Amino acid sequence: MSESGHSSSTFSRSHLLGYIALCLIWGSTWLAIRVVVSDVPPLLAAALRFLVASALLLLLAFLQKRPWPKGESQWTAILVLSFSIMAVPYGLLFWAEQYVTSSMTAVLFSAMPLVVALLTPLLTHRIVPRSAVLAMVVAFGGLLILFYTGLRTSPRALLGGAAVLVAMVLSSWSLVYAKQKLHDVDSVVATALQLLGGSAVLFWGTWALEARRHAVWTRPALVATFFLIVFGSCTAFVVYYWLLKRMQPYQLATTSLVVPVVAVSEGALFGESIPLRVVIVMAIVLASVGVVLRAEARDGTEGDFVLLRGKTQ
Image (cartoon, rainbow, N blue to C red; front, side, top):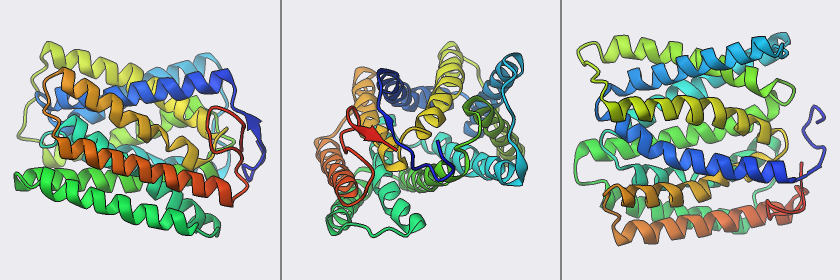
């Protein structure tokens, strides 16, 4: 891939498998996080998840003699992303899932492609299509309805929903930033270093904010933590950065279209109530995202909108 990230490549079977795996894994992490934070302080849970995952990936990087970042620009990007895509968003998400259901969290996070579609033209000085702007307004209205009807049951639920939205916006910016800065950095090494930096910040948060809370490592909490370490962090983020080198940010963000379906389905299986208004708003948000992505592809030079065929860049 060239430095500007504009070379094209076919969306192959391996890309398809990686895309599907990412959707299934991250669709399941919402429920796993909720299981963990019911017994373990949220910042501690996230910090331990990232620390163990980074150790496993660094060991793999050393054994395979993978290349390390070079130059101040790449190291700066790693440091920034340690905060912006690891520490802060996941600290907020782990905290929020104490008060917000996993399905509601996934629905709120599903607006990520909208934000990415907006940020990408702003950061690259491209014009946002009028149809995309209209779709964003519609989706935002749907999220407001969801926010004030589904989360107003308690002040903590409202704050939890706000935390998810902040995490979503920050993750969206990080996706565009990473596309620009990490195209030449090995995916395993980049993931390991960001997880390590993120764990350091989260451990500080644990010391500062959770000193009086104690973890209870029940069997469900241990199983969920293992899943989050091995699959939610080690596997998913490596696949995520690998795909980012072969796709545009707004295209990769469409994983958020599939994730809520997985999360809502799993939440229903484990007894979470799914109100009809959540299903309706989710349909509105996802339809609006589809409009944004079609407008972005049609008005630009990014290749075929349909991810599973054509070319990405």
